Image (cartoon, rainbow, N blue to C red; front, side, top):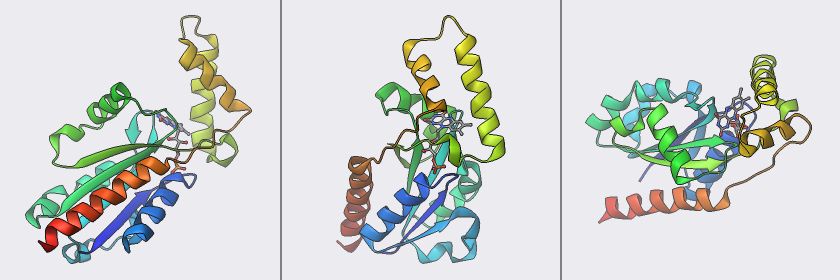
Length: 180
Ligand SMILES: Cc1cc2nc3c(=O)[nH]c(=O)nc-3n(C[C@H](O)[C@H](O)[C@H](O)COP(=O)(O)O)c2cc1C
């Protein structure tokens, strides 16, 4: 079974996850913008991973523009996100809701990624600094939100091996079913 892994990444986490998933299942990983959609039919399983900015999975809309084609081709769709939040049931539900993923027939995985202020583009750094300033001034901010202030001077390094394993297992399971 052929699988393609597409991604949109700003500092490399979603890209690394996409490459590791692809290499574990013998597939290719490609930036979403470089994928030639006219080759979509060559694949039985399509994976997309994007980084999260203010609750929105980047690149997801551009990917889902092709949802009807993927459904018509009877392709399996797997989506993962890379964000700095610690994955929780509620956090996952929030991401599903803010990205209206429940409208689609897809499997979704929330992978925790790294965060490094120094690696951000000018615009993303500005947005993040503004958000952190806002939290610093907000007296009612929860301890969890206050903890984000440490991001200014200390990067988070995280790799969700377990999450990668789950996505790989799912692709392998789909592949086995396709052969049966
Ligand atoms: C402006 C901005 C907003 C962010 N918003 C969120 C967010 O809402 N939730 C989250 O989990 N992570 C958020 N992050 C963190 C990134 O999603 C995280 O660092 C991710 O691992 C980056 O993936 P990438 O390296 O593939 O770009 C934000 C980062 C920036 C710069």
